[in-house]
Length: 277
View 1 (cartoon, rainbow, N blue to C red):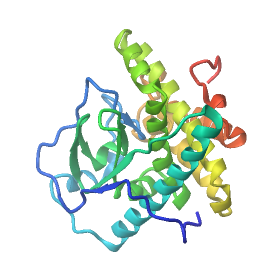
View 2 (cartoon, rainbow, N blue to C red):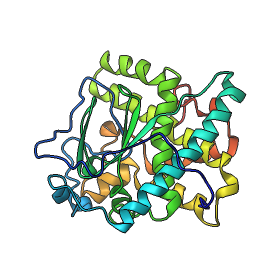
View 3 (tube, rainbow, N blue to C red):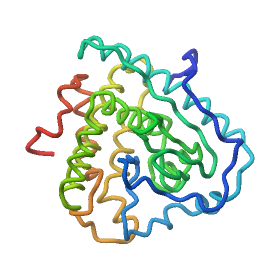
View 4 (tube, rainbow, N blue to C red):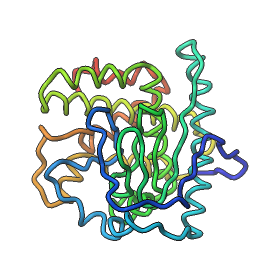
């Protein structure tokens, strides 16, 4: 992804030097915390995250790679601000208010509960902020097999897409619906929410087409496949259990991203009305 000359977003809250203490829990049960990688109850994903868990309790010294990741994140966030700042008025007839991206190291706190590098990036609707431990990019590439700078950009775009859903009132409505049904039905609603975010990420990808380099689109599609529920459960040594899925299969995630990319249209991302996911 060609980011040279792209501005850095000012909507960055950098907590990386603040560190984190022991016992920061992963919570927010009462709020819809949307995580880009599905860490399922009862699924042991520690083999995929060796080296990440040990860092949670000890603030790490910022490396050159970490600094580059922060710079990259700020520039990618700026592209999302520009894209949605144009798409909202053009397609919805309204203004767009961008989120803040919190960069942290190891652990931090949010109104949706504790955050750690092992949970993956997430969006908290309570404070309208996305949270990212920049070390996750290494996990994405080395442990999850989603390599390339555009795969990392897709991660950021996906979390911003959850903010877009929040702006449109979709997140609170889905949260209300989830609380009124059983776990299996709630999971099914969350799958549709996540696939819609993948589609919206595709809308962003189409809009930044002039910044793409050969292979970038395949990197994003591969990332979508690598973090599908079925793929993650297989990598954790489990037989995929569709009733536990919360993000969608590899095929579904890549297909909805491609839908957004091909159409560039928010309306094409209505996964809640789709008969086939």
